Length: 507
Image (cartoon, rainbow, N blue to C red; front, side, top):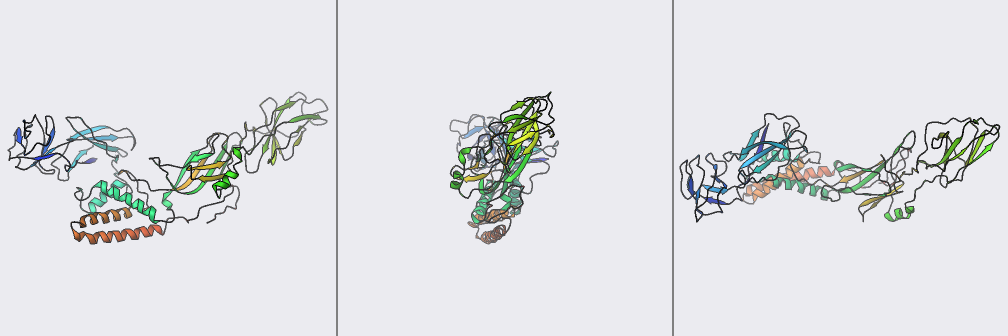
């Protein structure tokens, strides 16, 4: 696996020129002016990419700074050859065998290949494996200063077809500028972000390829969720689509697991008026009364313990009433339960056990009394330990606070989650490892090449026509994107629970 590093540019380096020609093996040179040379520096004699270019180490310059002792040269040099004060003279190669975000360990350090015609320094990793990633840093062997690391570079397979690095390589090859003489990789990356901005400004309806799903955990006591943000902390949501709520009530047996789309309030003010002070919708029966009646088959040897819970339409049940117990006597072997009605409840679950806290579901009723004569058999379901009303009824987009507000507030933290579906902004492209989000990368290539030829047409007018052709093709491609891969401008307004079949969408 050959890893290639692009040599640092010499354009911004301190530069002087040889005052005369020299044969190989000299240990001192005369330069035309002092460009801040000092002892123990690495300097390059000769233009980048020439066969006789080399790097030497300086000694202490003369008083005027133009006579410089150096380590012996390996090549002869002509008068007026450039002399550069280097920031870095070596390249360090690092490798991760645990993925793109794994630990990178030093692999090799190579001297800068200043004679390479492509202005590159390479290293061949003979032990490379599929899945390896590489990073590169420039290094000064005397000052031991290291540059920032490059973006991770995938080994073996190389860049994927939809990654920025792959597309930049294609562009540089197609315009025959692999050495970046007329355009740099950083410039091309900047053009890519201009494409992102242009697409967002030109569209009326969101692109399907920007549709995201993000998961938020339920947190007890909360009734809001912050809008999603990008890695810079900026709002990442371009357009809201809808939210699903997956309710899991692990306190019931079998476990209640419902996923449904929450109704969106028509306005924030409407939502506030219905918020009901964050009170729970469910409430348990406040008391339970037991009485003995004649008949029945309950055993006189047992003490029977009871609790009652309230149940609601399309909602988990409440927590239990206060526990009550009774023991029957011969002839009066029926226990009659009664409790006060609970507002909003449509039914009640009665639980019975033979020990305190050991109640299991006995029967479900709609009234507020029940006669237990011993004919019903307990099941396996246990009562919820607390009110389990986390069935969300309303949600509103709070643009002022950049959050979603919902009702009622969560009572418990558990495995229930929110699923937010939204259209994101284009990701800011910052490195060659970033992934292009459009279905194909062609639109980026067209724009970058149009801008490249436009830049060159300033001094070479013949390139203006090529720039125009690529820009026209770019606009055609942009129009094609506007005509497909997008949703209606409307957004979903009202939904009902998943158990219903009459879901509707208003546009």
